[in-house]
Image (tube, rainbow, N blue to C red; front, side):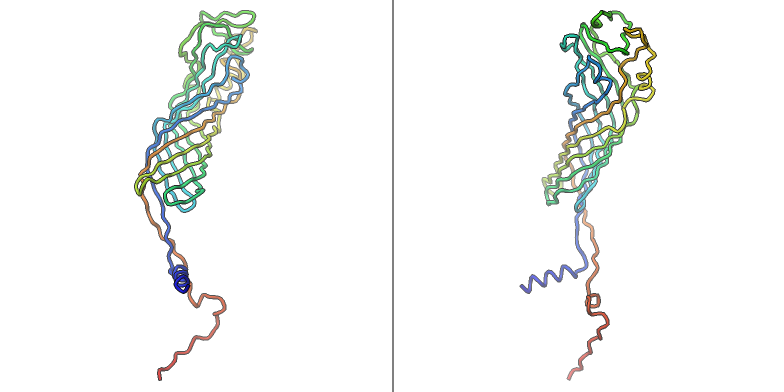
Length: 297
């Protein structure tokens, strides 16, 4: 019992505690499942959202973990944008509309550790993603068929488009660029939340898993293009009214991301000073007379 008490006193009065910082660098790869929420496309009878997977083919990671929390920076080549199925007047699938946006993404995340085991760390993550557009476009592919154009959307004047009483006959097209890169904003901001785990294989290497939901803050399209949709001034539609490429409506991008990584660990130890406790600092001893030195007999 005396040994336990002595160790406790030694720890309290030794004046120093030790904590370890874990710093790491690595490579990551991943997959994204994007969801394009577009009010205009939702009102268009031709388009229906389809489950889509995109790749994040390469990225890098830098992490710094302290006791209870940490930071994570993961610059990545990011691909998002949902695919839509095109249906004809009787509900048959006749083609696709493919929304594609490629970004250089810089997510900066705060990690709050759920646990702090020596070899495994599970963290809740909150991040801001700063994205710069490399390319953005929307491609349309469909076979010859008959579809319903909503009022306000222009029917192309190119050969093969024929207006009928119950729809529009359209020709076969393959990878036709419907919306070009210049219609998209060069910058986009996402907010992300999720979970991150680090599993240390040994003192030098760690496996990482990261799953997040990311929400687009802005409409990815330029305001000039949105004004064109709000105030149509193009070729008259089937009702002889000025037409636009699509119906007007706000758009937001959401994507679910899953990333896997391998990191090289650099461990650094920092000292935290603790104030020493002395007899003079203890309550109840202030103002007491100093003990007299005993004279040797």
